[in-house]
Amino acid sequence: MDLGIRGRTAIVCAASRGLGRACAEALAAEGVNLVLNARGAEALQKTATEIAAAHGVQVTSITGDIATPEGRAALLAACPAPDILVNNAGGPPPGRLNSWSDDDWSQALSGNLRAPAAMIAAMIDGMAERGFGRIVNITSSVVRHPIDIQGLSAAARAGLHGLVSTLVRGHVGHNVTLNNILPGPFATDRLISNFAFRAKQQGVSPDEALAARRAELPAGRFGEPGELGRLCAFLCSAHAGYISGQSILIDGGAHPQIL
Ligand code: NAP
Image (tube, rainbow, N blue to C red; front, side):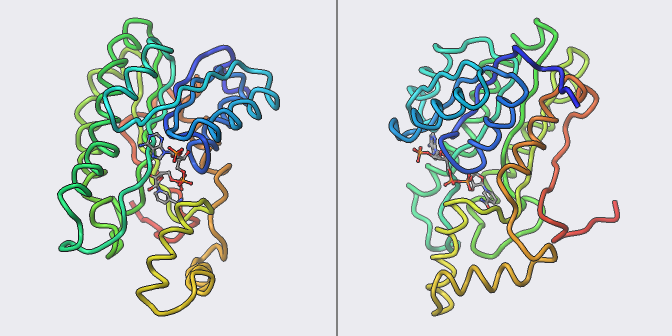
């Protein structure tokens, strides 16, 4: 299926690897030009070069921390009027309620709530004026299915879901949609680092903890980032203008729903 977005431009935040990169790749495969962000310049530039070579689109890399006003300003200066915005950032650390410091709270809220909110605020009105906009937030399945060690992630991301829900009805009539993708376990660096924490708690090796988790999953495997990337590309497509305000779980059937 041609997604009808060839020649459009997307900002993809936190995109040098993992799920952000997968979203960037899936959009590039549809002919979308990209402006990518991450903190590490070398990895980001390598990703940009690889995607441009593979798909023949323009890819600009802007190094910066999306959790800071300066990082966001640099991105917006490079691309003030994108058609597509994919919000993503590193996830908060796992832990327990009494283990997170004020700094941990502040970083989680900056990266996972304030940053996407500020990016949306900077571009949603322009999208509405131009009559096309697609905003996708990468959040987490913990918003719907709590995980004991992911309370900080759940708290920050639930705030974003709440905010997004208030923006949908005022913008869908201008062909601007906002949706959240809620990943379950995907095979990325983030998953490995979370399992290092879990393994320590359980007194096993990270590989043993990963294998035990994999065995519990009904799909018998972790998600592949490309599977999430292609869902994101569809939500950003010309065909998805009637899908807005949705939180779409992608977890290999781990949490079936009746309604
Ligand atoms: P990952 O493999 O660790 O990749 C994170 C990417 O984000 C990297 O490109 C990283 O590059 C960039 N990044 C991190 N913090 C940033 C910041 N402040 N500003 C700009 N770029 C930043 O992580 P992932 O697994 O793709 O996860 C992406 C998001 O999905 C996270 O919020 C994670 O919590 C969430 N999630 C993941 C899973 C999973 O199973 N993988 C499940 C549920 C939710 P730099 O380090 O160079 O900045």
